[in-house]
Length: 389
Image (cartoon, rainbow, N blue to C red; front, side, top):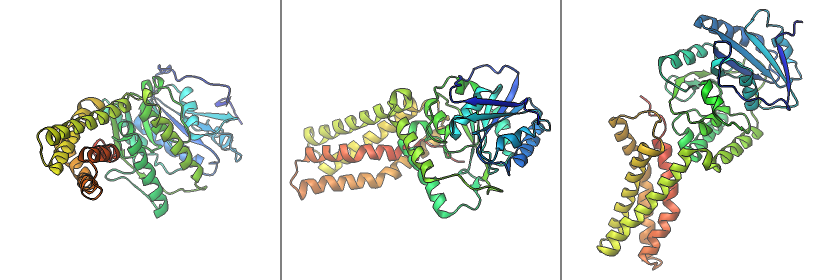
């Protein structure tokens, strides 16, 4: 067997992703694998055929974590049939996200792509990803399961619930970074090389897209639909440990605000909204002697409007451009999302005052600090995501 297209690396070989594409390659597609020997020939042939139809300079880089079933050796056997294929065998290190980074480190493409090696990502979608990139000044193009015409074939209700729950948790915890996309857990996307080269990546687990969205300064992100296919061979490697790693990843990204300007701005706006809420209430209730409920309602509305304005013009400035119609829809969405919460807040204030004889100002401050931060977080979940046509 000819091993000239095989590269072996170990955990001591750490390289940066260079900013330049040395060989004028338009697209590099990285496929991370582990025990996928039965399905990898069909996947590589199908992907190769799709890329040939684009009539571009491309390369395919398969990164295998030294699979016991020797997936890497099966792939090397296809390098004469697919001359654009390079196989990397990683020794002493495992993990999907780090395997993708390893592949990018050895790539030459102007654009860097990634797709799973289990056959669940349709190869033809790579053409849509590349063509969409060329149609606009995009920095990341994501294949999404959750927009119109996308979907998932033959998933159990429990797995759908886990996937949707993980997605929603990510959008709640890191709204500035991933709240603008519907499928931040997608493993099928294309990104500008410059975005990866300029971003310090330190992923935990297997969701490399989450890492890029949270740590990079990418603003122009586009999603296209695709249907997530059923496995044709092998078995799923998704386990409870993957969800634990995903949660660890989210928490790590959440507690490192200095690495995300959007997160710092988001927290600043939330704090400013709470202060404005309190000032308006004191002015209406304590100085002008307005009714307690009316004062709290107007103050809360002032905080909401302040939040929407500052997030649009400052926190998420540069994210997908919004028209006046989009902003009106966003305002309506926030009002709807927070309407019930505002009503409960007013009930709580009155209950504290009338049933527990609490001082009105103290009751207001108590509900403000306990209820409203969560309310603003909930509002961002519904508001600064992609608005579907």
